[in-house]
Image (cartoon, rainbow, N blue to C red; front, top):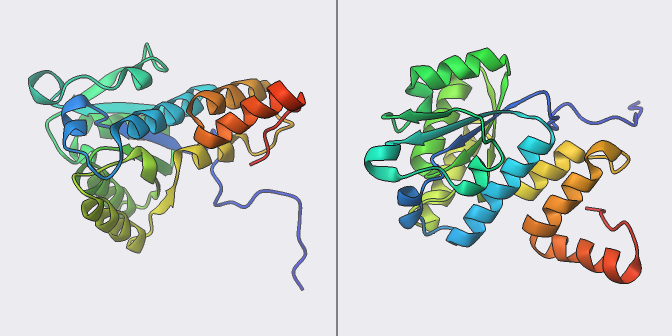
Length: 218
């Protein structure tokens, strides 16, 4: 007989149990991205960045050929990590960059969460490489993008077949909060949702303004 207990499952993320790697959210990489609208992509990247900052998640920021080709990382990301180093690479697969791997090892985390451009190259590469080395990998699918819907979807399918766990930007933030009784992050999370949470954020604004309620249920 199975007995239920009031506790979270071990597959759910917590702020302290994973490393977030945000990869190549840069203008040149965005120009050819067609699987997601550029505004939505930047919005979702901002939502992920805010969540990581709110919950003090160990985070690596990395770019590819920043000065010679791809341009700087999105301001929405840089703003949340003003003092964080940004590791620039020549490798398309960041898992093949010694500086990135040094930062991964320094974090001591065995769970990796990935977001970035493009899904079929710069996300598939580290996802499959990390899995091969024994890491548990999650991908924030709507904070990624590719040159076509087909490219993004086939990349996600390929990674899922190898054990990657897909999620979304809003899901990521709410999974870290998980309990609205966590008052220390409540205002920051609902405030971020108002700005970047789409219709959910509009619902929070409406409920607080019109109903005077703490509308937050996901």
